[in-house]
Length: 354
Image (cartoon, rainbow, N blue to C red):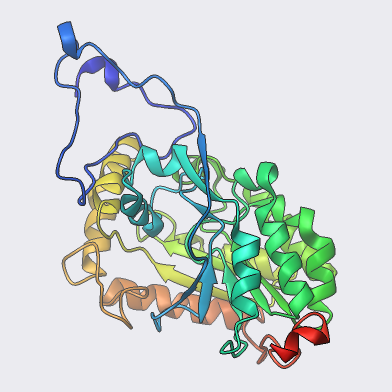
């Protein structure tokens, strides 16, 4: 890479655009001279509005606690360096790197698609997860408000939902979530993987601070919204030592349950994370990289159900034991709780005739 291109792009997690595995033709800058003297100077986010063909997807993986998911946005401006969803951007003809953070596909017809899905005669109510792939409260939501409209549709149908986010923007919709929570129709999982702001800014550059995330847990819990904390992902040698403190702080804020994932670097995320790790943490990069490999049988990714989200080997076992021990210590996951699917109904009794 030419020297002039090594300047870090502030506010972005990825600094590269690795090749799209589905594209047979790739373009690249070879030399900063003559006809090749061009650069991509636009670092601003582009919102690409479109009418999607579908919204709700059935989740086949047994490793995640969800049956169906829906994502109003593809790509995510948060720029989390480890995000497995980066690879899905390649299906749209973009790169999993900078493109994932800068070219956000907005499904402007998402509420209409959800309504059509819920009135299907073969729909047997199951909880729907918002943000199974990308964060539904990323900065785009402040402009488009699609997530709020999805919640409004679910409220109309008494359709239970689970939301996972790392953005305090969810508090804008607390009025809807509180009403749904009164009927056990809403649950929220707040993602926190480090309380060290210097790490958070590097790993998740455009996310809200961890104090703001704890505020989300505190405010929603105080309003009786079933709220928990997600330690995702746990990265050995980087943030695994924070497990006890994160669980303690989340529980003190009112979290009632917790979950975690062990980092896995699938597809292009392997290249993006590797470049980031050795750039941001050169003093410990080798240690972290090898620890991830030890957790996946010598690789940095494992696609097998049952182990890919938890890892294996001594390092993963220690993380698992720590999570279990401190979850119990702070009273997390101590109750059996589930969303209520029995209240689902079509709005307007006349619709039932169809």
